[in-house]
Length: 264
Image 1: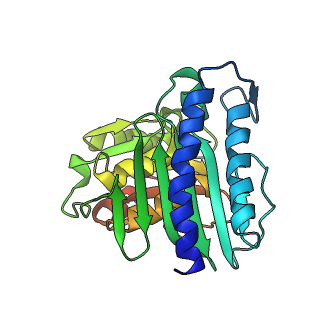
Image 2 (image 1 turned 90 degrees about the vertical axis):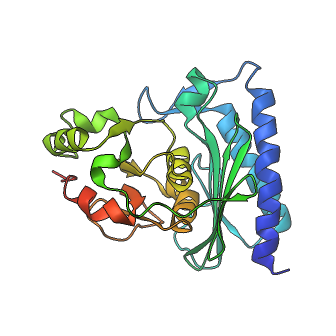
């Protein structure tokens, strides 16, 4: 077994072990803090979970780099070699307020190429896996290819309502046009789960203006393995070392969606 395949096998075990620990810890009192503003939360469970992964990775693969949301890992400035990109709890606001709709996300990249993506819906006990060139799976069952006959009028789009009100990033009038055109919109509050739901066919696209690499790393692999595409909102390639405005969808509606997303 190659080292990266071995890393993937460990990741599958560790992500479910971490999920079990979160389910146990969430019923006990825990500390909640804010980061950028009152909607951007971090808990001690986020940090504990990230530390759990870093300890495991460094114990078994000491030369691998780890990029994590909570800053417990290294400052990764290059994707050379093997890099784990981890979000210990994606959807912390949901975790704190709803106790559901949050996930653990792990992307394993080698020399800048995403080889394995794992997204674990903790409360549903559902594990999504994308394997470069070998498909995407939910709980071991292969996910079907995305319906490339879908039209924009038939599409269900994941988008935060924030982008439909006056803001500094998007022309909200174009978003109003988009909302009127598509079949419907949804907001789940977890980027990782939005990617997973596109791969599963639950929604057809996801639009947001500010995702960090750990929000994207696993989901991008998962979606690509069912025939989807992830780009910046201008159609250019995702930067896996920095933040991105993101459009993820099936290829049939991707170009059409780009025409509605105009940055200010």
